[in-house]
Image 1: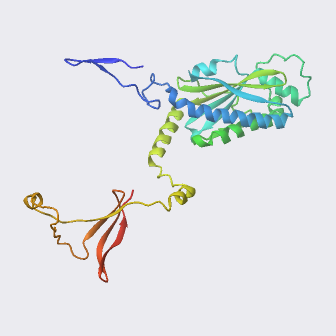
Image 2: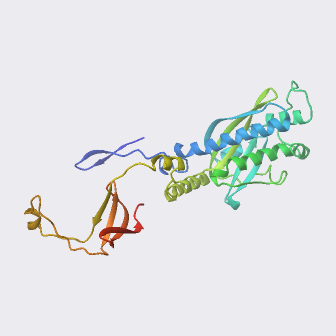
Image 3: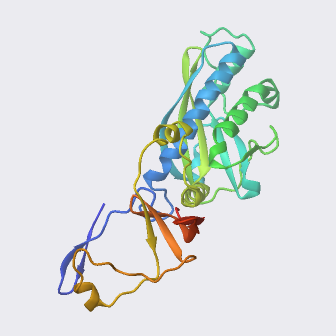
Amino acid sequence: MSQDRRTPGNGPRPVPVPGSNAIDACPPGLLPAGLIGFFTDLQEDFLRGLARGLSEYLEATVSASLTSTAQSSCADFLAENQVDVCRVILDMEGGRGQAYLGVSAGLVSRTLGVLLAIPADSPLPPRDAVTEIEFHVMHRFFEILTQELKRAWEPSRLTFTARPMGEGAERPAEATEETLLVMNCTVKFSGGEEALRLAVPALLVRLVALQREEDALLAPAVTPHPGLLDAVRHAAVDVEAVLAGSSVRMSDLLAMEPGQILMVGQTVGVPVECRINGKVKFRGELIQTGARRAIQLTGNSLQ
């Protein structure tokens, strides 16, 4: 949203709207909307891979989708006990942060129901935790979660290392006011729709976005496709050879008439610019080849 700043004597002056990736395009501590799109694409790729992996593992039709994104303090996210029955803690970037996979009670119960051959129409038992035995039974389920997450988020250069089940999985780090990017998802199978959440530190999201912008600026020019080069290989272009170093008095230049000859003092060895369609492409020097003058190219000036 733009606003006016008043400058004495000049009247209102409009303030430009920041770009979508501008760091100050939102309240401090929060992410601008333009940064979130890249990460939601990664999350949707994760969910597609998760659905494939779980469908094969559970021998059931599983689908998963991203329903919403939000930004929350770490304290608020961890306080939502009614949402997650368990959380998988993911250490990121060599200890520089933690991410969380929150799994709902319904998702745990439905997965256990399939693995233990409980009839699909049986009511889901109430639960507020996952036992050590249940973690053991669902080991492959959590393994698929973390493997697909690592694969899908690899383009972000954010690394996830899941803590071993039972070693801190139910004991999150101390709640802080750190901002998290929370991605709310649904997983559908066995006649129900259950919740899955991923929370990633907003600061790391910012750092990744800045690194991507820097990489884009430093990326080399795109090499033309070989097919394009073949298509233009026989095109004709204008070539000019421009001698450097000549000078003439303005009075002599103004006095010139058609038919007169302007003598230049260059000899063999003087620098020459070779222009293609008006742009300098090569540099060279004037040489003698028999009775003719020619240009010997000494460098490519095209950037």
